[in-house]
Length: 573
Image (tube, rainbow, N blue to C red):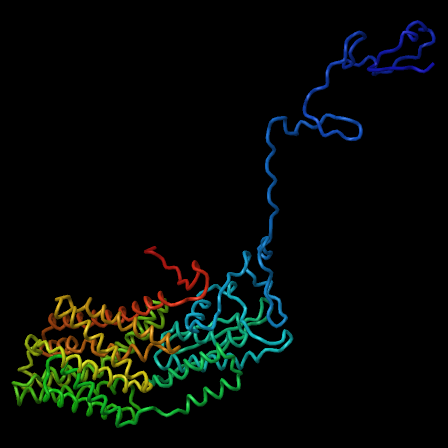
């Protein structure tokens, strides 16, 4: 007989045939087994799994109860080196993948059109992080080998050396160096510029050793003709794709080029500059001739000191002495002639406005080491002027010749609009010749200098504004026009700006400070020297602000948000 059990119960036939029934197992006597006649309890409702091949089955107590929304599934953790969905794949250049350098959220789109000046294109890329810079755009076969890295770095350094020695700002020098390296395929390139040292480093990939080269700038000059030629070379390299041989040939021609003006022309221009400056502060014809003669003698003495190998400090000392000596002599012999205007005109020709503007510009753009070095150079040159003038004035005061030089009434403020405008334009013209500018830029610099003086005179004389903000506004207009003209011609802005700020230089305030120091009137001397420093800073800041405003009206490549980003600065902490 087969036993039929369910939950431990036996059939009726088994109960009747007790003698033939087998012994029950231990499960029949379990405490968890319901007795006979008691219905089976319902199964607990802890949730059910979906029906599978045998029907519904109870699940674990960790299952989510009915009516409760399940938690959203977490996104899979990604890698920093993988692109998000929808992002463009890694770019390749000459068959070399750049996946290891691709940013985690894709490379931003940068429009490297040839219509935009290379200064703005390269400045935009230079201010990007290295990993976000796009690969260079170079036509050619994918398997074509690129140029030799050492030769490209050497060409880059030589071009940067000429620009830095010519007085160009550190940011523009770095932009030019990066533009040259980028044009020849060295996209992961980092140029660094200080006052005397240029360094460029290139690393092909994360696993390759970097290649670094540097060059030292030992001689500086004021040849804006060569500076403009270098700018044209960089423009042709970045836009027309010159070969290395062609670029080296052009660079050799630039170095061999002679100055556009002879030596005697520079000496005459120095005299005209001093004479025009003396007329700006109220001088007449006699003062004009005396100031011109003093500046010519000072220029010849400076050339003699330079030929003997003396440092630039002593050259400025020698150049400052003849105008001061002629002024003291005129003051002793002809008290009715404005001898102070003669000395002031001579100082106009010596004040290092070019180095001052470049130093302040480097400081405003974040190149503090270069800015500090340039301003220190300006300090030494001004100290040379002070030494040369003070030696003459001190001797004149003790001999009685400079006793009539009264700082309070030395320069009569006379409004002569037409004469002063002509004098300002003549001063800018002479300054442009001294800077060895190209002939077609001299006219624009002359007009820009005349406009600067008109704005300054209208604000300071007619409107009665303080000279410092009036000078800053006039210098801002100079920087604005100079930047627009340079972008229109794809050239440097210095030829259009440096000569134009000549009429705004603080020659009279500097002279008053020196005269008060010679008379042992320290308080008045410090006040005049502070005013001269404020005017000089106003000129430099105004020029830089005008240049930045000009860039707002120019078409700058890149997206609106990150385009032409500057470095983040701290705010007092």
